[in-house]
Length: 539
Image 1 (tube, rainbow, N blue to C red):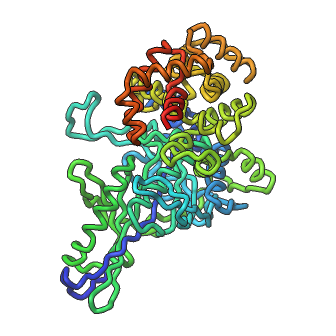
Image 2 (cartoon, rainbow, N blue to C red):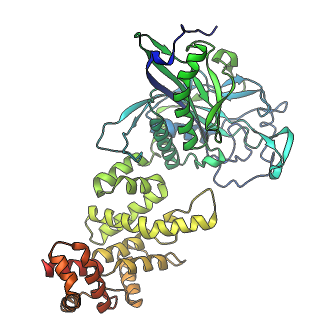
Image 3 (cartoon, rainbow, N blue to C red):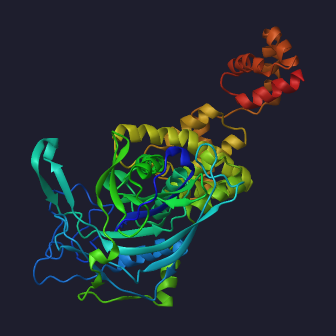
């Protein structure tokens, strides 16, 4: 029976503390499904299949069919568990979770109950700035990871016909049924909606970097289910806890944030109406309405015993020895949050720039390869990282965004997909550092090198070819000091008032002088160098 509290009014509540634990369902990007060899829709090579085309006897639970576990799915789950600092079980078993939905052909789900593959982990969640980006100057908060267990996904119920026309019945597509699903369950350690969203974003980045999922939210590759309640402190000093609400199947960060914030706002009101307290049988499942921006009751949540878990008799347990675990651990790359820290601390990048470069592993790899190539060209490492980042986030990101908009795809075009190689990008940035290439010339050559061509075989060759191309396109900046001095003198003479303003401390007036000098130079000078010389002459 659900417990009830004495009657209170809104004036009695002096504080409402949000408590959130998060369940994250991650579709693993294996070629085949969890317990059968039929193709998985979550694999990167999968296209939009016809409904009910990715099915077999195991998926449909036909008599006589037997499951065989997918080893790669187990290893992908171990990768995520190790990245979350979980203990990997030496012995884990499979269990049947019994419930009937039309999208679950067997009337049970193969999952892991009391002996999951990964457990007892932790994630250090960084503090954030006003933009929601990690702020390394502030202390982080540790979020406990209760478990990460493997199971199989269900199918999908559709409530409108192909093309979106209305129907008065439901249809089912079993393509997704049996897809490997990793469920990560945190401790109830979150205290704000922003913390929940930041963890969700960082977990997605981590899983994509590990190569275990594409993480395309629109395709349901990651789904979030926050478990939310509030601790209410009353005027008389008493403390009450509202029942837990689990909000199901959120597939965007905006919906996740909205659902948590709505529950934090609305649970105290509900408590004042019904007096229901946290206790056995009190948990409620709700859905999120993106239009009304509110949660809606779906059903009262089952407790664990309602699912009648028991060991699956058709599957052998998973036994993980030290050798297997070490082999899997060796596959873990430098993870996005560590790369973010490195880009901020080693290269002096801002949080926005570092976050953009660290978000996708291919982009991070491209950026670091370009930085290494610049170092091989003689640019100091700290300066190389800053210069490579500026080039990629300006000339590169602009073109990637344009192509993404043109393709109108759920998967954006990345900087590393443009066609230019890391050593070629490094060569352009190195020429800019040497003062041989202006900003416009830099951008023009970047665009030209994005066209199909054979990339150079070494950083030295890339630098030589980039300088040759700049000379051919008449983009090289002349380092003729006498000519530079004459252009600066002529510009100052042509605009005496602007020169006087600069001498008086109005540095923005230097723009007119720079424009005049650049016109006299005919594009053969670097605007930054010209500006520096003008300020030097007028100091």
